[in-house]
Length: 73
Ligand SMILES: [Zn+2]
Image (cartoon, rainbow, N blue to C red; front, side):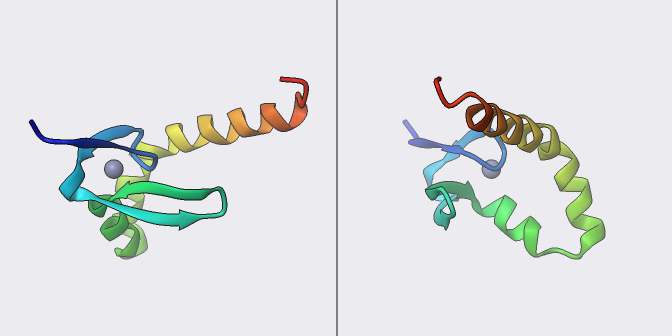
């Protein structure tokens, strides 16, 4: 049984072998090699990949904004 780790970049799980732990402003997070490699690509290639994750990133940003706006939560 392959171990999987949640990828914050894609919003889904990948096999552990495809994951790398990276440091972000909010702490250590797991991200897949595929998305890291995609980020290194020229802008045109990156945009094709980015379209898939834009909706997820937007939702995540909105969730964070809500936490800031509603500190009592
Ligand atoms: Zn991923």
